[in-house]
Image 1 (tube, rainbow, N blue to C red):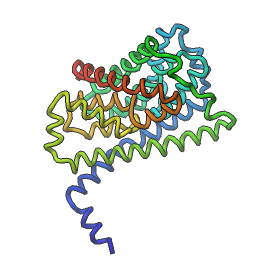
Image 2 (cartoon, rainbow, N blue to C red; image 1 turned 90 degrees about the horizontal axis):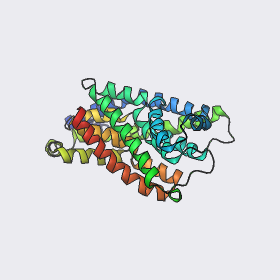
Image 3 (tube, rainbow, N blue to C red; image 1 turned 90 degrees about the vertical axis):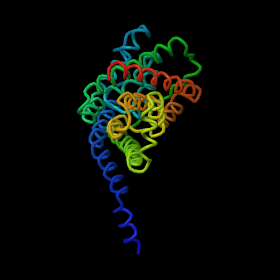
Image 4 (tube, rainbow, N blue to C red; image 1 turned 180 degrees about the horizontal axis):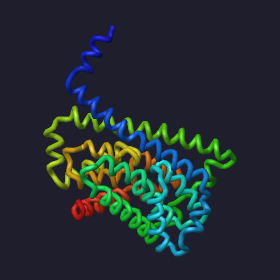
Length: 298
């Protein structure tokens, strides 16, 4: 009964364009998302949190950049970085260092940077700009928390979510959880990117993209609302060709440090008082740093 109308609707040029963009974004991003989930689950389950406490310097001011740089060698998305940061705080790591790791790990790890290079083959500077801006945001927020943060704002989890379970069961549960959540956000992000490309009037996008300040703010807010996993966001950003490289850099820097799902994870792990203060400060700093970095490097 409905085969004819559905076939006719899908044959429309706008739907053909929508499906092409949607499938392209999902197929390009999926291998990186799966690889990142497998690696982050292995690190969360098989590497003891006490290792990080021993590896970091005792002085919080020095531990912040070290923890931020550690994110470059520890693959994982923001879904995995929040519980790892909670475990670090619970094991005695300075909160400022743990928060720097929380922000840097999803943004500058090898899987994310490789995905960015693949998504922007004609713009190698995008990888360097993303690394520099994201690491700066992580370190600055860590130092800001060390200076202004209060212990009663941060409520670390009482125990690890993996306690009392075998490593194999914990690993596969982590993989299933992250694939389900990150894959769902990838699909939503790909749908939004396809809609922007195929449905939203081109003059609207040109109006926003043509204004340097407005384009940065629009993509910053879009990154928060879409809540795309950091292993997949580069392919969505690459599809937003109407916008400048600086605006798309802002999308890539803001998304891994603050979005809707990350805010919920932070509130559930560290408490609402923490999330309500940490999230707005992170958003403002990420927008400012990414805009300045883009102006210099892109």
